[in-house]
Structures are given as C-alpha cells and as structure tokens.
Length: 506
Ligand SMILES: Cc1cc2nc3c(=O)[nH]c(=O)nc-3n(C[C@H](O)[C@H](O)[C@H](O)COP(=O)(O)OP(=O)(O)OC[C@H]3O[C@@H](n4cnc5c(N)ncnc54)[C@H](O)[C@@H]3O)c2cc1C
Image (tube, rainbow, N blue to C red):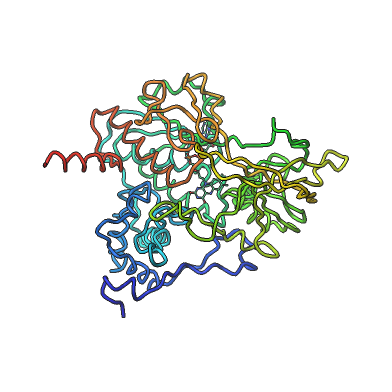
C-alpha cells in the first residue's frame, strides 16, 4: 500500500533503474538500463516532498516544475504529468535519458538523503506519454505569414523550431548531416540515447508543419543568399570544432591512428543505423585504445571502444580526480562537482579505466607513420590563485610510455564551424571560456538584425538541457521581434514578470 504523500520520502529509498549486466550490455548498442516497474516509479514520485520553495525549479535551466509532475505521476495521472513537463521542456525523453540532472543537485531532500530520482521520472513520464498516445502533433491554429530559417537541428535548433512553428511561423530547418538531431543523433551513442527516440520527435515536428532540409549545409551547398527569403534566421550550428594537439608542443600529434572523438562516434552510430561510411573506417576492434579527455565524450569513446571489442582501454584526464562527496566550497544547492562514474567506465575490463593528472608529452611513430605509443607525465596542480587560476607542475620521474594502436581525442570543442558562412552573413564571433562563440546579446540577437544565435554555437560546448533552454528562449525573442508580442513561454520572462507583479502590488 502507498503511504500518504508527506511520508513518501520516509517510506521509500531512492531507487534507480537497474543497469543491464555489463557483460551483456557491452556486447550491443541498446540502451543500457532496465526500466523500473510502474509501482516502483510511483514510489519514487512519492519521495518528492512538494517543498514550499522547490529549489529544483531553479537548479534546472528549464525551470521544470518537478513537484507538480511528480504529484500527478504518484497518482497515476500520466497525461497531466506530461502536460506539466511539456510546459517547460519540449523533449523530456532526451533530458530524462542523458541529462546530468542539475535539478537533483538542488533537490531539498538531497540535503540529508539521496535526492529524488527526477531525471528518471522525466523519462518515465515521457515514455508513458508516448506509449499511451498522449504525444500528438500540435500544429498551430493559424499561420502568421512570417518565415523563419533555423540552421542546425541539434536540441537547440529543434526546440526553437518547435516553439516558433507552434507560434504560427513557417519554419524551415537546414541540417548539413543526412539526419536531423545534431549531437543527439551523431554524437551521443545509441546505448545512451536510442536514435528512434530522436526520430519519433522529429516526425512529430514534421506533422506539426516544420520542414527539415537535410544534407543542406548553409554556406556550402545552400547559398547564404537563400536566407534573404526569411523574416528571421536562427543560427543553431553547435560548437563542433574539436580541440587537438595541433600548435601545441606535442610531437607526433598528426600520426595515423589519432582521431577526434566525433569521427569515431559518428561512424559507429552510422553503423548502428545501417548507413554507409565514406571515410576510412575507424575501429577499436582488437586494438589498445587510449582516450584523452575525461568528460561525456571521453566516456562515450570508452563505451564504444568496449562494444567494438578493443583489447584494452585507458582514459586519461589532465585535471585532478574530483572528491567522492561534496567539498566545503561546493555546498548544496550548487551543482555537485563530486566524482561521477558512467556506465561505460564500469564496463571497462579490469575495472574503472580512468587516470587523472596525466599530461600528454608526445606520440610515438611505429616507423610507418602510425601511432604506437603515447608518452605521458603526471602533473600536480596548485591551489587556485585570487583569479581562480591554477598552475600545473610535472612530477619528476613520473614519465610513462603507454603502448597503443589508436588514440581518441575527447578534449572538448573550441568553436562553431561557422567559417563557411560567418563572413557571408557578417556575424561576429566573440571569445568564450572554450575558444569562440557567435556573438549575441541577451535577446539572442547577433551583430546583424533579424539574425539570432543559440545553443552551443553561442554559449560554447555545454549540455542538452541548456541547448533546449536557449532554443526556447531564442524562439520567444524572435517571436517578439516579428510580432511585437509573444505568448511563447520563457523561464526568464516568467521570473521577471513574477517579480515585477510582486513589486507592482506593493
Ligand atoms: C560525444 C558527446 C556526448 C555528449 N553527451 C552529453 C550528455 O550525456 N548529456 C548532455 O546533456 N550533453 C551531452 N553532450 C553535449 C550536447 O550534446 C550538446 O551540448 C548539445 O547537443 C548542443 O546542442 P546544439 O543544438 O547547440 O548543437 P548540436 O547538437 O551540435 O547541433 C548543431 C547542428 O548544426 C548542424 N550544422 C552545423 N553547421 C551547419 C551549417 N552550416 N548548415 C546546416 N547545419 C549545420 C550540425 O550538423 C548539427 O547537426 C555531449 C556532446 C558530445 C559531443
């Protein structure tokens, strides 16, 4: 029997979906967990305390109304739960699978107990919605006669396109790849996000009236002049230029066998989708793999290498190992910076394959132009100075030669690949903490009128949840510009409007 709501968190413990056994899941590219039963999911919804001040709202960039959807879910009211979720998030089935769950770091229950399983609830609510037929096309009642071009179909472009179309504008999405979805499709591996989950959302958008033009790279096979046909243009091209060792004092950086992670990951998704591979095959099968970079991309390279049957995999990271729990300078409700271990890291033969504070010094040639080893050294990091900068020092005698057949570079991305058209459109770039992004103001307006930018292209490499947020906010800014008013929702506008209303009452 289920308890009354106020006692839910005292009755049930946090329960996450069980992972499929590592030996089984590492042999295929299917999603890696087993779903919970409906009863278990409802029990997790009961754990949400319906806090007077729900910090999870502000922990999530989208302002997801977590207590409200959990309350409906606990009562088996999936349609209402989904409606609440959709008011702030176009694609909860994406964030419910791959978000690091910023909201859970700020869950009030998390101060003393394991936080509510908010991410899992999102996925369950979305999947209930899809399987029960609650997710249907929502075309606009009338059209405004305005046309908007969205360049790029990652989560930011998709969210913006859906919002703008629902506001009645005619939306055309240009995508240079052969499939829509951006990094959701060709980036994040299938075992984290099944591609059918992306494509069914794209189908919903097509039924709503959004036009997708794939194999259409603006600035290459689509002339920039074509954009003059639109009332507004939104640039959502991501930030996909990989960081490499080029220009650094690391010899051998261009040997054969050293690849940017995305080349490797994209090829594998193409294989899963039964598509051809035009370039040289990059495979980890029967190879000793070194992955450089300890973020999501590095972890995805580890999981993919294991699935391809590598003989060994090592994941090295320059920065220090995070602590096992929150540090004093990282209190609740901030994002919790403690160590995270992905399902891929758990799959590595011989246990966790990560090593920290490892700097790459050089790559060795086998005499035929192929990589055969990487030379590294351990570094120590100083405490941050007043400006937050830390310096690294090599530890004498810690040099090491690691034999390998393939090296995957997962060291982040420096800037959008905007070169083909940034000049044609005369948009400006500006510095950000990773390199460069498209310059845009708080209303997502670039240096050119009626040309907007959002997502990783503007803010630098980030997360799917931030991309959806920026897409939604940019859509509202464009709608405002085109119509002089907007009924599209906005987290920022909601906060400002509420504060303004409170003050005007006083
Ligand atoms: C391997 C990997 C794993 C990740 N894992 C996670 C994760 O687990 N959780 C998470 O939250 N985030 C993750 N991220 C980050 C997340 O995927 C990105 O932050 C997010 O996809 C950015 O969305 P976006 O729409 O701004 O850009 P993108 O998703 O990069 O989409 C941009 C699109 O624009 C297209 N494009 C570019 N130029 C043109 C042009 N000239 N004409 C037409 N189209 C163009 C590109 O082909 C692409 O489809 C991961 C990233 C990578 C690389």
